[in-house]
Image (cartoon, rainbow, N blue to C red; front, side, top):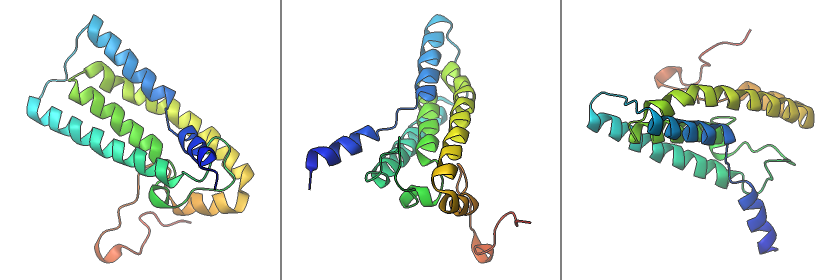
Length: 169
């Protein structure tokens, strides 16, 4: 076993989505220049911010560990286990929650307002990634796309748990 190679692969998979980092940075700068608070109950905003950071960090870490044996920049196989069994893009979901949590915790409306812009840019990148995956793994990705949602996992509740929420035609 080559430990340095394994660590190199794991470290190369650390997700740093530039879109979210840029949105947070722009929000922080705008907040310094023209402070704009979110308003609302201080305790509630901070509590939701901390929860968003915690859940986002946990999702990113779980996805990062689930993909530890695959180089995400050039995958030799689809990662479909762990959080990837629930969402095709759990790292991006986690980063969106981290972005939201940072804005809420700072009571920073600019950072929160930058989230939809950053998410739109992330989505365009996801569409490009999906084209590459579809070309690289045609049958496997086609099945994966049909069974796992792009971002938010499907809720399966009660007696209808085995039925799809939106029947395919």
